[in-house]
Image (cartoon, rainbow, N blue to C red; front, side, top):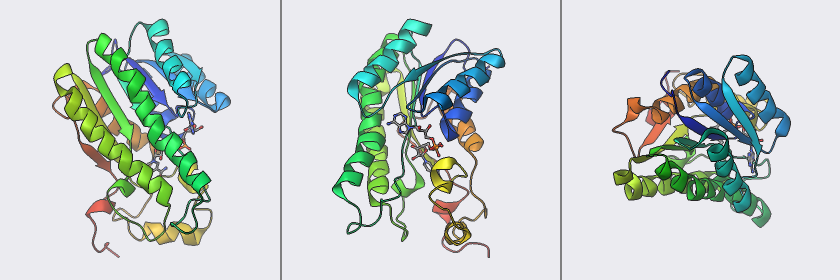
Length: 257
Ligand code: NAD
């Protein structure tokens, strides 16, 4: 029960990392606010938590919209009396995102609005609520591509995640003496809907797998465990970190085979 008496808000809670984290946080005692634009997915996550005896509410919010972000934080306070853990996790990877020549302004702006501005808005409204609750932990989902370049480009996505990492670091420094920790989670490539719908052929999957020392994609459940560590007091002396959970990809020069 590492999150007993804590209120946690998780964006993108209707799928992948967000869903696994919502159910794990609830099992560890947190009251969970599940946020998504996919109402079916979000409500399914809440139902799973409730059927296991946990406490959760669903809020529809598009994180690229300020009013929606304000409302999701207000829901946490109204439903559960405060906010201690904020997992700004929702993000997109658009199929038309490519290199500088291929990527349209529209795809660039859409990706930035959700992946980067969405995290900013989450922090903008989440920080005052966390402060009022006596402090807590913010986890922002970046990516291993915030740390290294790929010849299989998704320029808008990569730039947005670099922004998440830089923003998280600075917020960590600003709020360190207020008992508000801010860390960025940098997952490696995962077996979730987001990436697998993008890597829709065996050839595309192999093009990536060859660079991962562990030789497999990660699992959303493995990211949830990392997020739990960052959310709980187990990581009480950690802030401003780029927490890499990537099967060794960022450490590799040559892979085993
Ligand atoms: P996913 O697609 O399974 O889940 C993302 C969820 O976010 C979905 O439920 C979606 O409906 C929701 N969402 C999308 N736009 C939204 C918006 N505007 N407002 C609110 N919710 C919105 O993806 P995932 O793999 O679980 O990814 C979660 C995070 O992890 C993302 O930020 C992603 O960029 C990051 N990430 C994923 C991988 C990977 O390989 N899957 C690797 C590194 C980082």
